[in-house]
Length: 455
Image (cartoon, rainbow, N blue to C red; front, side, top):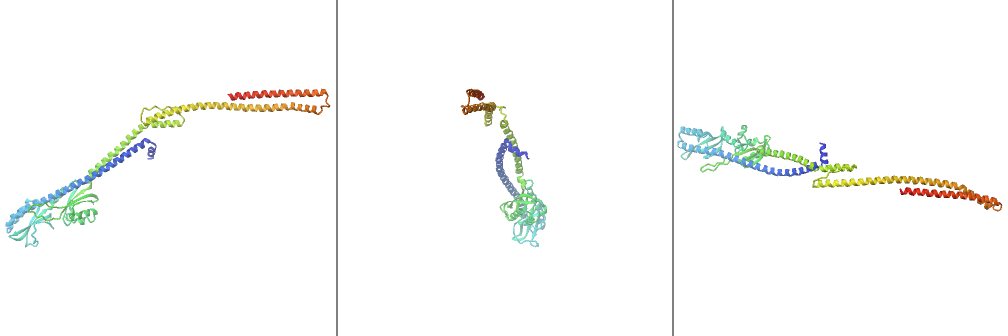
């Protein structure tokens, strides 16, 4: 992990590859996001359509059962009506109705003299109460002439209707439910909640499920997102509607049919496809990163060689040649220009080295000449000092004799004067010889200095 930042900061090919991959990943992410947003919307719309079709199919199958019950009951009703005072035939007809119609669990004749009789002349469906295995009752009034003498109640099987409702599901884990107008659970996969009030059952559930139940009880259509038993569902609901048939009593039952659709069933394929696409995208980006890394690494190989050559040049190695590149791109031109620069630097450095050697030789010669000049200067100084010292005695002798002649000229004899003059002459000749020697030595020293300077 510590080497990765160093690899990124020190490797140009890796940075270029990451830049390319980051740009592609951004574009891919945006494209996938747009695709999956619209795909999720399409999947949801398809689920809505499937749920709507399941609701319509369930209502149609239930209504077909009710319609068949109505037709079978009507046929028996018109047969037993002339035999209203023949109990044996009435019982025979009612048993025949139950036997020939599998959806009917019971057919009962209730007379007005019975304590449970009703004064209603209503013909149609009513919700059953306290009847075993009955979901609803189809009621027909019995008349003796124009006087109502009783009713015929035909109970529809809860088991049969439940099977139809529970079999109608658009996905393996979805299920249907049927609620009465007061919220009583008529059909549900869990038999422990049947005939119980759904509003009471959802009191302690997630609030979204309670809202869906209240919407069903109120006879609304639509769908809601809800939670049940810790799982996410979409609840699609619609009031139960019966088909209009001529001569049919269109009494309102107040039922509501619902399809409880697990979110996993709706988006399972979508989520699976999303994961597959993400895995493929990540794998593709990784492979693309490696491919870009290898390609750019190969393309930048001349630059790395140039970097090594620049390091050698920095260290003073100008002689190792750089290969000529046949590439016509920027890297190839850079390598060839760098090669020309290296050759030019090598030539310049060779010339500078030769010039340095010449300057060094001349410096050494100047140093020797300077040392010789200093030695000559010392010799000249010593020589002048010696010559001056040697001339002091003759000059002093000449001065004394001149003073003697000058001070005692009257008292000196000719012979004495001659001797003094001869001494002066001798010492003058000696001074002259010393001066000639000084001049000769000075010319010799000057000739040596000029010879050294010419070198």
